[in-house]
Length: 251
Image (cartoon, rainbow, N blue to C red; front, side, top):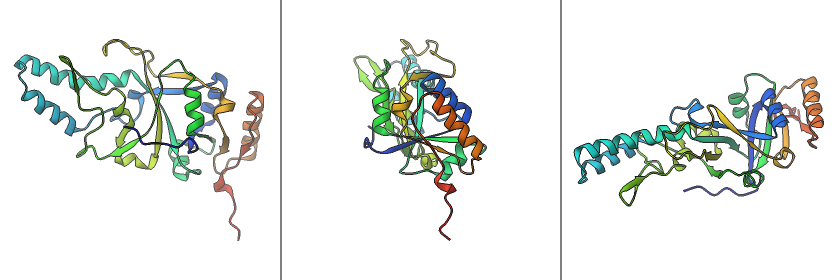
């Protein structure tokens, strides 16, 4: 289901200064609840999947009432899963991305954290939660089915893939080149309340997770120094680097 990512592949997280300080103070990565993202298609399936399920149910031997229930339950399952799913998003790239700086920062007061897939995986494997890592697959939802969207019969019940839809996005987001860490809270029934309204923090060792820290392009010198002071305060033994986009041309 998931595309392989080498352990040495570089991953990036772009954020503003306040979020960076929060990460240091809490020693944790924040996983946002899936239904709190701006993209309302997070964890969604495609119209192809819905049509296929409705056709399958319509041709089954179930009673009319049961067919209606099966279709309704299928539709509500994916919306409900969003309330129980939490995601940490990372950009995969060999170097800095000017587009990601612009996308995630509203000013020059920003930071990019660079880690590797292997480091991230190693940190999250220590969590008590079952956290899955996967490279997002970008597809045309108008013509392509979404993994996890086809229910499988288990006895007299039908089950969908609870994680796979969250490792797919519409192809218009392909510029994000995203790797995701995903987990779900311990619900027994999809109608159960979510563990958190907005997201959940997962503890990590910041000094072991982060390999490099870069300041946003055109960051003033005072802020560069301030970030280094904050790192020293939290005993994170890394030196802050200037953005590669601040390097002057040779002539």
